[in-house]
Figure 1 (cartoon, rainbow, N blue to C red):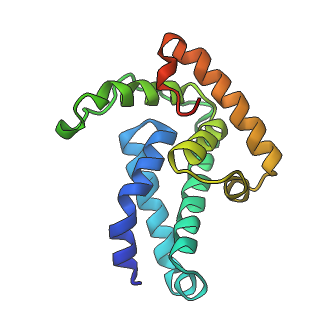
Figure 2 (figure 1 turned 90 degrees about the horizontal axis):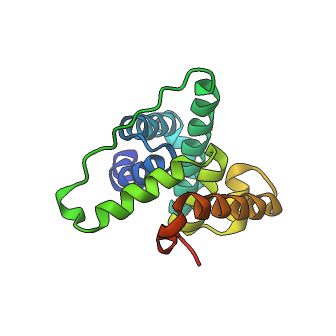
Figure 3 (figure 1 turned 180 degrees about the vertical axis):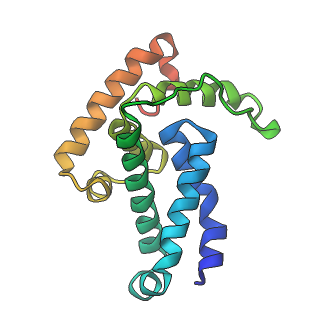
Amino acid sequence: MEFEEFAGTRSRRLFHVAYLMCGDWHQAQDLVQNTLAKMFTVWGRLRRGRDEPGLDAYARKVLLRMYLSQQRLRRSGEVVSAELPEPSAHSGGQSDLRLTLVAALAQLPPRNRMVVVLRYLEDQSVEDVAELLEVSPGAVKSLTTRSLAKLREVLGNDRELMLCP
């Protein structure tokens, strides 16, 4: 697989993950572009050593590390925007659900948000998330439990919007 093909087929999914983690359209675009730029510089080596699922996992890992790095830099002077991007015309009745979900996820700390996005929206196993975040599976379970409790608290009466029972 050539880099252009990889980038063309994976950028939309990477953007989806990035947006759910950061809640900012432009920051998500930057995260995806920077992820793909980093991968491009080492593409020859990456392609030789990995199959397609391995390349996808590597891309997610780069994306997550970039996101965490940005969050560390922003802690002292983060500017929060009250504006959310306009929902697309084809989203229909799902737009309120998406906005509610994005707003609830924004209430979580970055690592907790990443765990929820990876576990429930990307359907990754506990072990895969632990490997990506370089923590133990027990830490992932603990972060998941705390994150879901916080989401339940934030969503209140909208609990049917929860990602899992």
